[in-house]
Image (cartoon, rainbow over all chains, first blue to last red; front, top):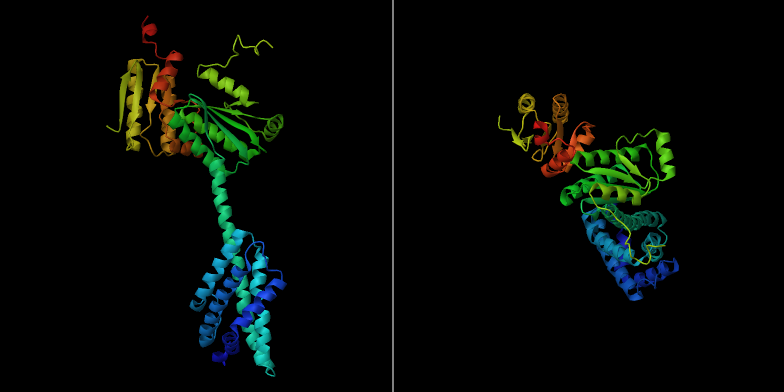
Length: 296
Length: 126
């Protein structure tokens, strides 16, 4: 019994591959999987043809063995083609649903031909349809998995980029560094920030560091803890840390939370912090005396 | 003991710690240093830990202790050359060394000590 499984499917695929292909593409168009704006008809046709070929080979090998499992060796070809096509279409902006609809559309031409072949043998037809259906569903799910994997990769890459971008240490003046923090400060980022800051202190031989939190949305106890730890590490390295950009709201929250900044200097604006930092390295910014604008 | 050496520079004591210092070396150093401070009547001690790659709570505590001992003997202690990884570890361990002065390099430390009036061999003798 098992060796007969998928027998009719294979027969149908062998006899009328061309017809199935045409019907399949028509059906897919009807189901809304056609995106002529994203890929040409010819491309879609070629892709469908190569998928159908791989499908037939898979069906042939599976019908010999009798058990369907997408992870089997027989389906390696089809898996490869599916992920390749999916990859290509993701890049062009095809939606996962459309890709799945495209694969699932194969059922219609296949089943109609099978039911013609197995007229009067209802139970055999149902049995075979069950297996084929399961297989095609598995392909559709597989394309979705490929989609998700691609997305995950993108997210991962962007997260890495963000981590890198979000910790720029800028040299404002000789021996004066600043670190403008933006967004949220979780443990991972805080660690990253501290590392790059301390490294920069060694490299630039900095004496004063301004950590500007103007761009930090909220300061809770944990964020405050991270900031104070960073300040403590900076001090251990032998430099001084000024925290600037503390808004009135954040100042209130910090007091309400009972955060004690200890000896760490805080300034409301980066302007004040800069003046302070420059003074401690022995320079000053002053107006140009005979400038036409300075008199105003 | 060769894991740490004490030099007299510009009227202050420079302690250089090497990377392979052991716990018993540190205790020995503590003993030696307190004697040297008392004898030389120095007002400044610089502990160079730039060779130190790994710290634990013991090293952190000894640094704090050295500082406290030196202060009792009227000398201020500057820790210089701390590596970023060491600083992060100490902070992680909660050892902020509040009584230590810190400086990036020996040069910076000397400058700070000069402006704090710790290196004033002439005025002390006067």
